[in-house]
Amino acid sequence: MKLLLDEHFSFRIADQLRKGGFDVVAVVERAELCRLSDEDLLRWAHGDGRALVTENVQDLLPIHGRFLNHEEGHSGLVLTTARRFPRSTAGIGTLVAALGKLLQERPDNQALCSDVHWL
Image (cartoon, rainbow, N blue to C red; front, side):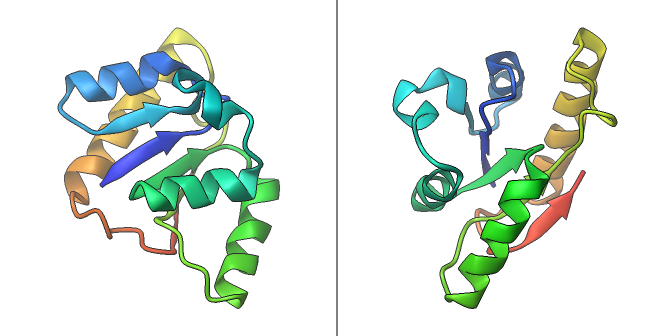
């Protein structure tokens, strides 16, 4: 599985996961992605075969529902919370470990096809 980290995540998370051999991109690493709406970001991620990792549950879950209702697929949503994975140094390490475990357990690029996974 490949991941796209939403804009509220540090590029350091993607960098650490890439050092572990995983294909991960952070929105903040690509200026063209920072300007996209949530729907277009989910479409871009799908076009690149990436599940979108986000804390933006309130906006992305309804978009997920609309996509399903209109038979528009996506490559998956991985939902997190700042409570479980604080944006501190320790939180980053915990999130890297959790995402690394998910990537090891689900290496197939279609692992979350149009599905939602909570970390």
